[in-house]
Length: 201
Image (cartoon, rainbow, N blue to C red):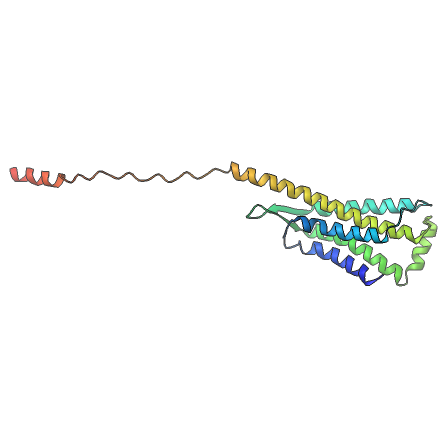
């Protein structure tokens, strides 16, 4: 693994950890993890191998990535802030699922390139996985499906929040304006009339 590989995996983990305390959902924030994984796919993905059980491995990892990304998006709370802007807050389940996918891939790459290559090769032989490229493509597509699924769910939920917030504000009862107090008429001549009547008696 290169320094870039480590940096990409750590960046993907950090993107979710910053949402544990709550973060506004923006277009840039949503597309950043997809952009990172897409860059990796264009750099390393050369084709989808189909020999032996290579395709099964690739599709299986892609399905696992989509499942983890979907669950991570589902367990992320999306609510409007005081200005009505959607805010995403990743709970422990959401953060754990995302780290499970990203950290699992990172751990596998470290294992395969630091003494575990023999074990991976034996597993590949037993299960008819014909090339190292199959593992590379499987991990890349797993990351891509995970990022796209999570982004899609959060984007849809943020859109729903933006639609519901103005409606809720419009349906809220408006406060009635204060009714001005009526001023009682001042009878300026009342005192003099009373005084005149008392004198007459």
